[in-house]
Length: 199
Image (cartoon, rainbow, N blue to C red):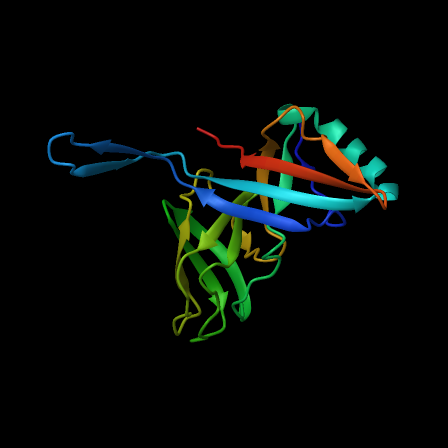
């Protein structure tokens, strides 16, 4: 099934959007020393709470029904960060990437604060990554950008996307359309989503 865009008109009243890491913890029963093993499964997780006037619920419920529960895939933005807070000065281009590092060219020469910690970058369709430190461009307009989570797909070389970055996600429940409607005819939906991972 082709992933569908989450309509920007359905903005949540409350939002959680974060990277959930995957670790295993082992506690030595004799010394209480703790060993932590990081596993390769970090992914984006979201919970969106929508409160809609009754006349808008039909369209939203039709949208959810079309997803067919967790079988469908969505391209969901983090509504809290629709734009980068860095200047993104120049005409930056995503040139390459591997592991947890992106190579970006085309920033204005020597520009400071081109990206800020917490900004989001789209590296390929549906792949969202968070910048983890403030970034300045060098004299040639290049920058090495550290991101989380790690790259899972090859980056798409081209203009750097930092606006309305979307993550490929799916519903976690077959009952996502469950809602509570109260006077004056407002319905509340709590939508839980997880990133769709590739091997």
